[in-house]
Amino acid sequence: MIWYPYVQMKTMETPYRIVDAEGVYLRTPDRQLIDSVSSWWSVIHGYKHPALDQAIRDQLGRFAHVMLGGLTHDAAERLSDKLQSWLPGDLDYCFFSDSGSVGVEVALKMALQFYINRGEPQRTMVFALEHAYHGDTFRTMEIGDDEDYHFILKARGQPGDVVHIPTEIEALEQAFARWHDRLNCLIVEPLLQGAGGMRMYDVSFLRRARELCDRYDVLLVFDEVATGMGRTGNRFVADLVLPDIIVLGKALTGGYIGHAATVASRRVYEGFYDDDPTHALMHGPTFMGNALACSVALRSIELFEREDYMAKIGRIEAILRREMAGFADPRVREVRIMGACLCIEVYDEATLRGYQSFAYERGVFSRPFLRYLYTMPPYVIGESELVRIVDTMKAWFAR
Ligand SMILES: *Cc1c(COP(=O)(O)O)cnc(C)c1O
Figure 1 (cartoon, rainbow, N blue to C red):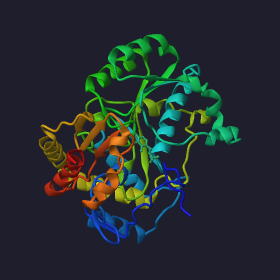
Figure 2 (cartoon, rainbow, N blue to C red):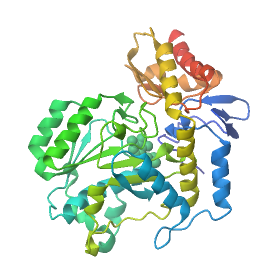
Figure 3 (cartoon, rainbow, N blue to C red):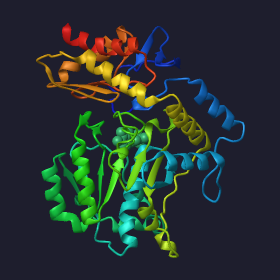
Figure 4 (tube, rainbow, N blue to C red):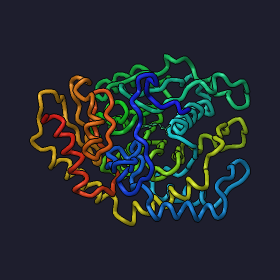
């Protein structure tokens, strides 16, 4: 039987059974629901998109998958070329993996080994943000027993080597002043912290982070698994402030197949590129560069460019702002909007209890968590459907 995510199986409510999905709609046996969360923020073009379906069919006519160990293929090459030209600056060196969590692990491994290769193994420390979310994995290297693969683990330092910093410039400056000589990277979800509660913060924090990283020779890593591909109203937040490493996932494949890319700058890449085999990056997920995933990701990016998705996202943001203008309720702590993301934060999570079935009855699929009621709709959503999502939220508070 299926063991479902993030839930007590004993008390969980029966999940809705989806028998078909098209555009922004999920179909259960008796209803059609507007998907207000885009399957964990990934299905940006909607379901059953003809061009994406076709990209997979075309690739399937050749092969579904071959490994990237000692082999290569057009789909992976074309996607890495595309990302190289599409991403800002010299974020040109693309390491594929099969999920966002692994993509983040790869970024952290790169940052640590970058300094080991340079003869600075004392730089084991990582700065992250308070309320950060970067994935759900741990320990696979720890229980592994193969020096060739996992020498990096010994170099990693202690768990106490992670310091969490609030999104306040002063705190960031103090942390850098105190620990910079032991630090290898600062990793952030830039501008929008998703799973930590759709928390939004100002770009000035990132600008200062970039300056401090430059001053102290520390790598800046953007986990854009959630924010990439337009969600914040920027194509990538990296368009505003350039990181040394960016991680993409979720919407990378249009939500079709799990895949991620950890893309490094020239400087990072050159920290590994020499005649010493021990300076190589020892990582290689079985399904990295999966041909179906790469084909659909490439088509997704082409659609994103050709059909001016940034304009669609701008329109979504304008509608969200218009529809939420004047909304107030004593149970609501804050309403936050950025790009194609709206979050209503309440004081007490009990306020949201029952919302999911309330929305279901009104033809909307929603999945609030903790104190956060939010939508991150597919970018192809029509105005009337988007208004329906917001109206359903407002109706909950109007009862
Ligand atoms: C979802 C998410 C991840 C993890 O991605 P998975 O594909 O679920 O492993 C990492 N970072 C951020 C910011 C995310 O939102």
